[in-house]
Length: 226
Image 1 (cartoon, one colour):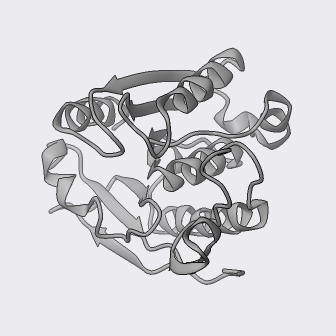
Image 2 (cartoon, rainbow, N blue to C red):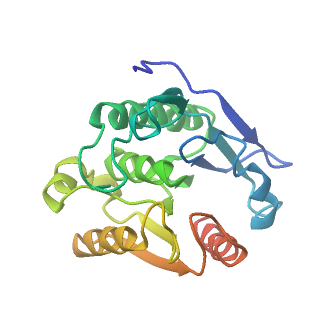
């Protein structure tokens, strides 16, 4: 599947006054852009921090672990027992390029790149990290929820952009997660920390989801960024 140069359809939530910042938030497998739209008011950013939230919809694609069932996904998944095994690099790269187009669209609207945050849940977290670490202009931050970064230090060095060497990174994960195990976020944190990134790991008593404590921590982090 190739997205080429087509902008993804998005759910957008705009502040009451012209936006000075933007959060591009990627949903998880099988969900859509509406998945996290309802929590925006809980962050309490408006009116002092007029941030636009953009929730893109992933294209539908066959998902191998679901018997090839077609559903919204940022890339194919072939195994849950070996989550760091074979990766759909073509699908990942395709989605990264699609998110870059959305960043560029926000820049054309007048939002500086360093006021654009990439956020993602589960599959979306991987794409948010890949895009943010690779982007050639400084971004505001990366918010990675219940996901992981499945690449080695060598691979990270190959894709990393000097422009985002000091990007703030928030990793949040439930310790009771049976879909994407918590230890994968720990490994991601260790990798990024060892490579000199400004990264924090936040754990919660929950499964593969988001709870009130995490929403509060995200709100505090976004207020720091913006």
